[in-house]
Image (cartoon, rainbow, N blue to C red; front, side, top):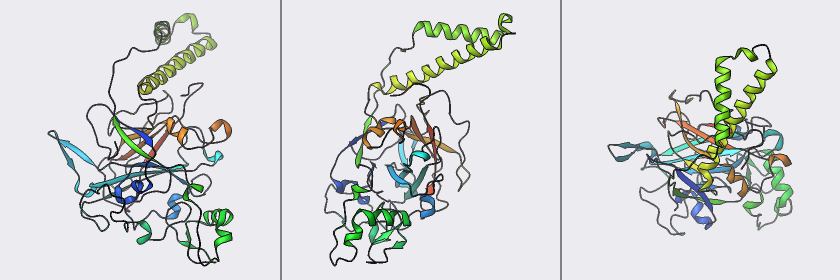
Amino acid sequence: MAGPFVHEKFGAELGFLDKTDKWRLESRFFPSKVGGKPAWLDLKNLPPTEQLLCKCCQKPVTFLAQVYAPDDDDEAGTRVIKETCYHRTIYIFFCTAPLCNRKNSNENFVVFRSQLAKENEFYPPIDPPDDPDWKKDLVVSKFTKVCMVCGCLGTKLCGGCRNVNYCTKDHQVLHWKNGHKMLCKEPVRVEGEDSMFTLPEYEIIIEDEKIEDKASKLSSSDETELKEFEKILKAKNPTFQDDETITESLEESVADIQEDKMFLKFKEKIDSYPDQVLRYGKGETPLWVSDSNTPSSVPDCEYCGSERRFEFQIMPQMLNYLQLDSISQGGVDWGTLLIYVCKNNCDSGPTYKNEFLWKQDFSGQNSI
């Protein structure tokens, strides 16, 4: 089922990818999607180019995904949507350059939150009908210039034809080398497909997670061994007090088993829905892939000072759909990407507000 992600009290909402008609993924239908160009919510006030550059290489980032999730609070069993968050979308961008994809580093990711009231200057205050011809003029190019390559703000104009815009010189050169050079001065130009420059495009469809009790896959011998190791370390057994090598070995063994426990918990949780690419659970505890590299704290909202709370996470299965090389081949990889958003969904600051992403990679030999 397509539609907005909402907060459920029990269990998570899961996202799966599916191919659909391209018109369903346009801004006017408030999509949740992966790949292609971003379907901007606010069609006029797009993020400035400097906010869409990788912190590592200073090149333009690539659109990864967006999640449509109007803010809501449960008051006495009734869902109440915040007036200024009748529409609300979270956007994730990242740099695909191999050198920028560092283990457990979020420096090559960018996250934005955008929200609108029910009454706004772009969309009528009704649910959009399932009609490809409905409000076809509700496109970002009607309100501002966008980059031909990535669909982000395009402030640079082709000096030849003066009809095509770009976000940066990098994307202008990329487009020039991939067809625009031959078409620039033609009176009638047919530009290449968007898919030449963007990730494969899919709709994110929603399904509730049905929770089932399952026995742990951690063996009883591992459980016993872990308890014994912990008991020895806590007691500081005099047998090992003068042997640092043995103590370190015990500590490493405990850490390894704890890592395996966390990974097995992660794997058991997703086994029932192995194709899930997203888990939505506002304010819930994230599903970690490892006991290491978890955040000790998350930075507060830079606009209102409120704390940020966990909202959803992107799963490693999404990588299977993106046609990107794995990290072993000098490409992109992650264990999970966790998105934290201002708890108050404040209206302060720009239309597209920066939010926080934490990247956690698999540790050791663990992987899906």
